[in-house]
Amino acid sequence: MSRSKIVGAIEIGTSKVVVLVAEMADGRSMNIIGRGQSTAAGMKKGEIVDIRSVSDCAHAAIMAAERDAGKQIEHVYLSLSGSHLWGFRNAGATAITGTDGIVSGTDILRAAENAKSRGLEPGEVYIHHIRSGFILDGKLVENPVAREGSHLEVQYWHVAADEQKVKDQIMVVNGFGLDVNDIVISSLATGSLVATEEEKRQGVLVVDIGKGVTDYVLYKGRRVVQTGVIPVGGDHITNDLSLGLRVKSKLAESLKKRNACAMVQKEDRTKKVPLVGDLSIGDSFHSQLTINKITHARLEELFIILKNRMGSALTRQNLPCGMILTGGVSRTPMIQELAEVTLDVPVALAQSPDWVRNSELQEPEYATVLGLLYNALHDQKENRSDDGNTPKKTWFRKVTGLFG
Image 1: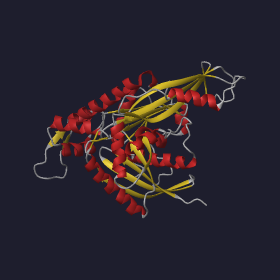
Image 2: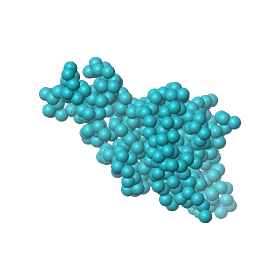
Image 3: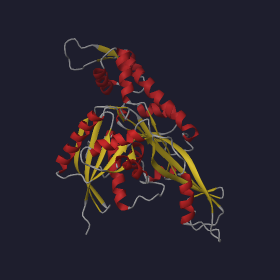
Image 4: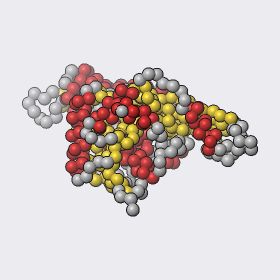
């Protein structure tokens, strides 16, 4: 009888470090038994700029999570974000070698290896090779095995990263005496949680707007078609408000959370809102119109950048299920309406699946770390073979080799 495994999901974000501990039994069940969280320091736009500060914050969150769980973490799943991540599409091709012209698993493996053979620049490392489809004799097919043909192409979306930045993330966890079992880029972790299999089949774009960056992933035919990171997030709105209203960043952040709206309303023209809002003597008042204009402009810019990145892929025809918004900034009132107007696709706010019963964990800020646990559960069910839906871990030998 196999025993349960204690898995830790760690997200080191721009604003906070979140650690969840779950007990998993044979890949069939998962029970979240602990949580730890700390304010992040030493992070900028999802990347480490001060490894000592980040380590202190991460270790505090890990200790709190293990203390809450009453057990020590055995396996670690770590999310990865930041503008150093980049992706590209590349196919591998092969002639069908069997005398009967029937496609075999060996043919697929040969084409897959060709797709992954593109070299990277020094200092870069592959994170994921995600299979996104097969083309047999010029026709898109779901599964070419046992079909007759002469020429096979395997389509892949590849994700690469700055090797040193990946190394820094791993070193933070290693510094606590833990080994990282797998890394999943944040967009994939989030998308696996908030998008249903039917949405992924029809076509859906998942967009996670955090404090420092915006992560996105596009699904079509139940496969990952494209991922990316935009270096714009909630911090940019805060900075804009700080400059525009001539107030300190801390007060601008508070004002954003209390009063900012993504769309300008008629009543904003005459409305004034307090800066502090605690009825203290000397509190100043600011125009709701100005606050909303600043917020609208930054979020509209973000959606335009996203639209330009996606190109013709971002249409109602290609995305019948539209876009799903999550992340802390998705709390902004009327952001859904702004996204629909700017992108001309249906937009919904993410909902956590039924198995997330804790009301606080259902908030959009926890989508990525919960997605890591979802990936970990499926990792227990299978060997994470290259099936096109989950990334392989062959890259990990190269990354961990940096320490040997």
